[in-house]
Image (cartoon, rainbow, N blue to C red; front, top):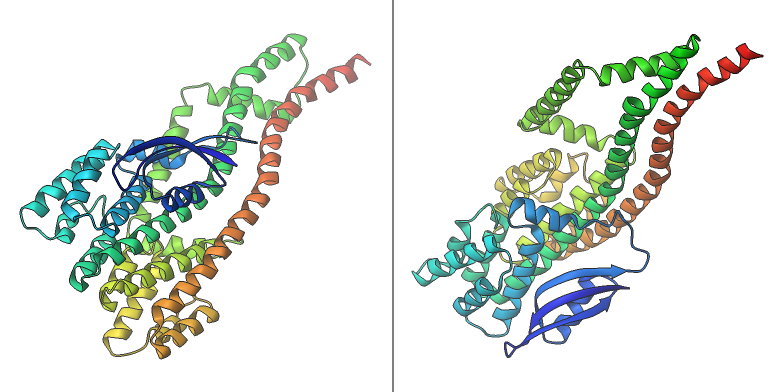
Length: 410
């Protein structure tokens, strides 16, 4: 169980600050919502069995980018709660802009409030801030305004943003461990090569003994890392990294690498499941909110996160424009399994496409969670071996000359 410190207001506007104990942040928020409170801020406290690797990556991302995903999730949840409680939109925006702890988000909400006061529609006001509120968000708001069901759409947006935050947190959590261990391994390896090994090298030189080939190889690497020539290695790595991102930023490069990622054992299967879960959840939410199907497909294509899936969505658009069915285009794709295609086909035939898409998304959410747990359990021993191997490689190089000296003495 984890402690969460929260700040919230009740329906009368009274401020509450306290601590709640729950299994997760989502469970804590649900408990507070059931009590009639809408959360202004919630922060994770200490938990039993905590680890130094428990990093709040969302909070770090928020500080680096100004407005993070967690800020948007909290705003959507609060906005939906206020509108559903019967509070006028102008007053709700005024409350949220004054209570937002993120200064960047507070300024944007004030601008949106001013635009709405001047007669601009809510969706158009949000569309002026595309870096924060993406096309998917704006389209759902516009559909809610057009259909007169803004309160229902806000609930869907809130649920979808929470889903997006959970999925993002799962991926970041899976990546955090290998990244941190790899960084520590490289740092330790560098320190041992550049600081510890040269001291042993000086001792062996005084003894006048020939060094084993492996030890001499490590010493040569150490000398290179401590020499000005190392700058060229750093520049070469930087150039390769820059080149990769430049190629990946092109349409052909992104498609090539995304297709390659799908073929990597274990990881490719997980990438595929994440892409399917994101596609079906986004598509289902848009259709259920009343967004036209072609517009929904355009938004899904932009937010697919995978060039191979985006190309499949583009084929779906062409199929639908010609009066065809969605599952026909999916059958020509190598990304979507037969089960997904069959369920979407049934949804089209019965007129319940949004429901079937949501069921597929629920299934693949579970698959993604299981896949991430399996990948993490596989990475943990591998990273330990990797870390031990790098340190052991230097230690063996330091002790080999000692064995040779002992043999000479004997």
